[in-house]
Image (cartoon, rainbow, N blue to C red; front, side, top):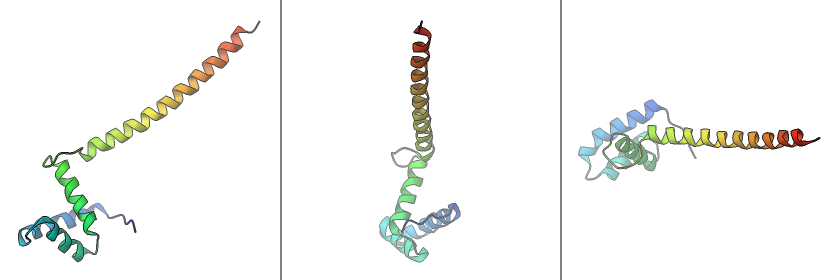
Length: 101
């Protein structure tokens, strides 16, 4: 099941993970513990932790704001390409109309 968690829940889970890390031998042990307490998938919590590290520059990767901007620009680019194709088709149509005697 794909469940959407609130930003507050995400922050709470990550805070709990930070507090639990010193008590566990490794990160995954702490992740499993906290995820179990919150009734969520350990994978969800692990991904949130990784994303936070990437956004903070502690781990290589594309930060969230850059990824969102890239996604927005790709959408905009696709829209502009469609608009350009429509304009090209219209210019061909009107050029043919002007060439008629």
